[in-house]
Image (cartoon, rainbow, N blue to C red):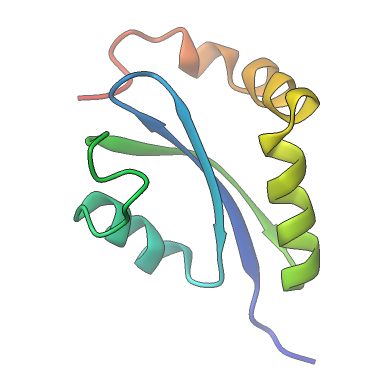
Length: 92
């Protein structure tokens, strides 16, 4: 059994939108986003990591990512992160 975790993460961009993804190396992936190396977010910088979850395997991470991208998943995130989303100074 591998000790490697998989991470589902949520970024908040300059337009106050969510970007949801997953990675087995969270720190490296966030650095790629911040360095403008990820096509989906390079025009939306700056971004901020506002939420992540750890999963014990890739299958669970992919399932969780798909859920968070769904309507009920986005509603969950908005409710879970409402204090942070309401902060107008979140992205600097």
